[in-house]
Image 1 (cartoon, helix red, strand yellow):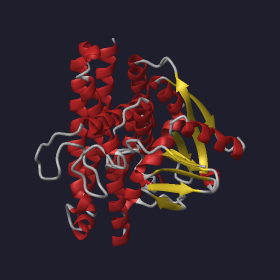
Image 2: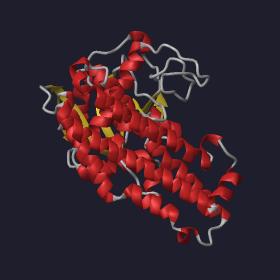
Image 3: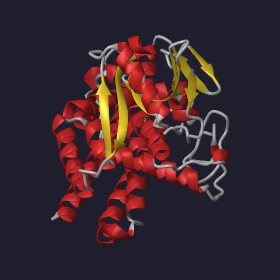
Image 4: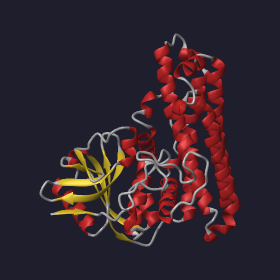
Amino acid sequence: MKKIIDDMMVQPGGCETSKFPASFASIWMRIEGITSADQVGRWRFCPYMTDDFMCCGKCHGDGVKREVDWWSKCQERAHNLFAVVSGISLMQLDLSDPSQMEPWWGPNTNRLLDEYDDYVKFTMDFAGYAVKRYTKEADKTAVFDAIKRSIDADRPVLVNFAPYYDWYAVVGYDDETGRIYGYDRLQGQWAPFVASEGYEDGMFYLSDWYEHMAEAVVITGKTVPTVTYDDVFWRMIAILETMDKKELFKRSADYMRDDANFAGYSDDQYKALMERLVMYIGMPIDQRPVTSWCFGALAEDGALADRRQFFKRISALYDNTHDICWIAWRMVGAFGTAPADECISGLKLPVVRRAIAEIIDVVRSNDELAVRCLKEMMG
């Protein structure tokens, strides 16, 4: 028997989306009954997307404002909210450690957050879902049976696959082949899903899924949420303060300021630095705007109207982070904004490296100001 949940808003694939909130947003929409037959098989957020990229839902690269359909906006808001609730959008990385940008920033921020607390449990408690979690300690047959029961109940399964420690929405199974089916659209933008056996109707399939599985989160039903918005805001404060104590942004800025780190660098080494900077800056330039958009949406929530001024201040801070990070991104030629040779020549100059360090300092400062705003809001 083969069963596929085919009336699902599949996970978005834009540059700002990270895998856990993207996959969970799609699963959440399906469980909450937010589906539409004419949306099946579409990568959402913006109805004016190209085949392999999705923009933020505001324009199509030409600056023209357009209306975004309700399903796209709902999914976008769910993703942004769960990115903040989970804490993934608040993470930092250390530029001086090249391994933190391999293969991209997403899985490494997941690992960093995992060191802080159980972000999966916190997110599920906020959503009001009862779950059963399976690791390699569970028998393969038991896990497959649990996945089958969930799919049969029209509930997709959240699965974390090695080696990159990233999350996917599993939406189907086949008894005869032992395969599971799911979506990996975001990962496919940057690199192939290395565990994928093949693709069918836009879904990856795996027969040896158990060998690659790190964890499966099976939602068994809905419960009364035990995590409130106040819990989310206090946890945000704690996470941002913890990140600041780790001094990951500070170490990154100090690394760029210390000329000794680049003594004797060859052109190839400067090119590698440029590529690492593109990836490193990509984390706050993507994730702090997600936080901004989340708080912009919360400012429209009538139930939270008494906090609107604080939400708008936090949103403005993270919009600023996005904008100033683009200055650094252009310095290192992200998306072809400057020729590689010019970027390499620029990075050889201490004044350019220090300018990038100053921008990293502003990113850190905006996080600190957001903490102050949250503390003022919470009294």
